[in-house]
Image 1 (cartoon, rainbow, N blue to C red):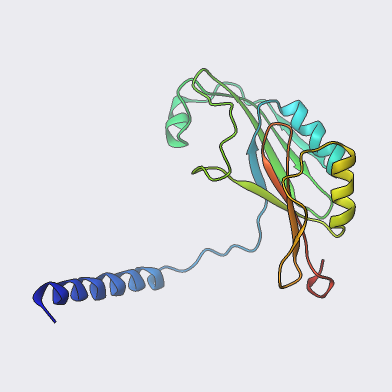
Image 2: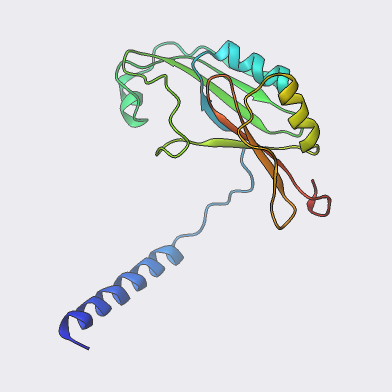
Length: 179
């Protein structure tokens, strides 16, 4: 082994040991479930109607917070011109919740990021009837991104788009897993 290889091996072992020590020294967070998923939308009334009509989601809170302090804008990496107009919490049967946010400001980009852009995300919702859900979405002229795919473990899924471009996945578990 040449001297450079020895140095690189020693550095690698040291980094690995330090990473493992840091990973094991802190207790893990005691997380048991996802409480809700937040989505920024360009028009909160349109988004609320969409999720209510499509999924039976009901509004459990609707807040117009007023002026947001500049310190919060800095802490949460918001644009300086940003103002949070309103946020609405929706709850679906089974307990899943979606929190919708509507911001305004001259610096805000209203264009939905591409699915492969950093920061882009999607919401995956479970359904017991993926074929019926697909038929409903098609009947309502909602943009379907792919036909259902069945994984080797029996999980079925497909994506569709909300009117403002957010990608939403519907997932159906095999009966043996609780779907």
